Image (tube, rainbow, N blue to C red):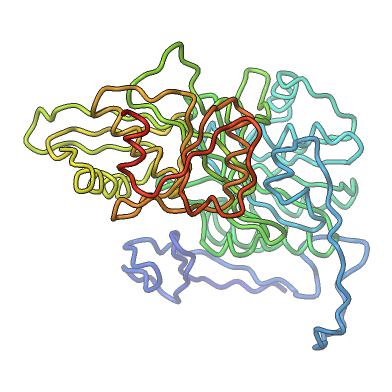
Length: 457
């Protein structure tokens, strides 16, 4: 017979207490403890049904030299951007959590994945939309797949019954906050429900070698809703970013047990769904008819992908007592450091100027290799003299005004050459062992002052 007990759970971090307390001892939040009833069922009955129950034999320690290694079999999707972010495809038995703001396109991305798998049986479970709503979105996307099944259900026991009957090769849950299990008596979306439902799906994925995708909501601070332990339980955490008023979306890897955590996928939101952007450098550089002051192009690296980023600056006399400093897509503290370097080493008076800096395309870049492009953009805006759009920059700037080397300079030069740039400015220390490119001219510098003498005369 099932036993029921009552505990108090923090809705912020998931910590438990035997009685109500005002301040959480784990996350220090106030008034977050809510009473939840937990039903302990017979442990001999699994929370989901399979053909074979779990092995009763206890695990034994084995020498690491005796463990046989194996290569993970990956399921390649028709989405090259998703394959790159996942590390080469979907690993069997993996649990992937994808989060993002409402309306950003999470459900559209997962439905496109389900519909594009022609030879793979996929079960798309939705707790937020009816089957008719999903059908309308599928018709708008335009994909047709005979192996995609739709299920509108929120109870995990009923979902596992349908999984046992259908035996899909891929399961998508939209979303994890809408699921509930009979093992816990609490509302859907609570910390206990999210944690227990994820644990059941994790056991199902590992024991049947079936990959599972979970769509998760985020809080107003931008972090994934639910307990922090949720991100530790899953194998991969993906973040879908972008301004929903703009067309471009970015898929980042926050955690990946089967690949790199620095990969990046870029999509364009259209009326017919999400379109893969194979060459993001072209969309991140604004097409303009003439050279404009305050605009410079920098070469950066996101994961294994080189990108050309457009830096835009505006410098104007301060109309109030304290000058304004505003950045979009770039670290504000680093911009203030570069302004201090330009003022001290270059003699430019930014102390009485309002400075605004923007990274075009709506993305955020933190790499120091954009320092020289930022400095060129700021100086161009200060003097109101445009920088030619045939020049790219790839170097870090030190506090002494020195030009420092950056990694993977060959990839940056090759990307600039492919996009038609005629010159690229780099550090002298990057010239060692550098192969001479065919079309683009590589110019090296030691000091920031030398760059601006060459650039503006």
